[in-house]
Image (cartoon, rainbow, N blue to C red; front, side, top):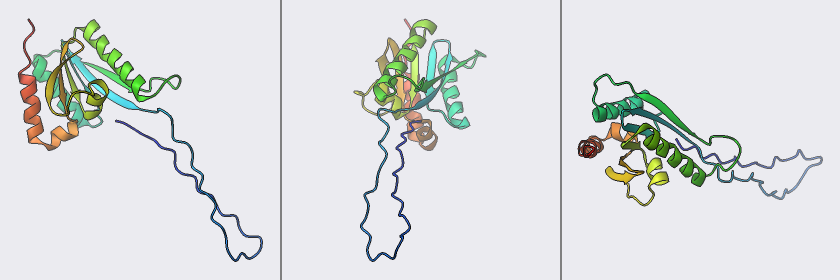
Length: 180
């Protein structure tokens, strides 16, 4: 979940008058500078066999949707899934902006593709599409990404609230070609 935190404005506090005042002039309101380049992201992923399902999954029902998608893609044959997470920023030092988050997230997913043999990735949410595939239009669709089939879909909240979004997601999933 993106957490843009802007520092609250500081209001000038009036000093008690030492003698009766007839008119006070307004003092300028000081404001603290906004954080530069701060961007945060909390992602949870589930990987099983050659499939990675990842997104912002804050609620138990979000995790269930992700596991259902994973189960559909790999079958519910008792295969154990691995839970993985991605947190940004990863430390309090160094670059913490959006571009650095994009690079780190792409490296994280590339590692899943290369080391774990992931061939299908499901990305939940607009934030991930904007970070990883900004030139791709929003909507449920399948694209090639990092040598894997990547299904882009809305947030799990959108899926919970829209039967049309669910149908569209399942259509993308069910038409993924088998590996050759």
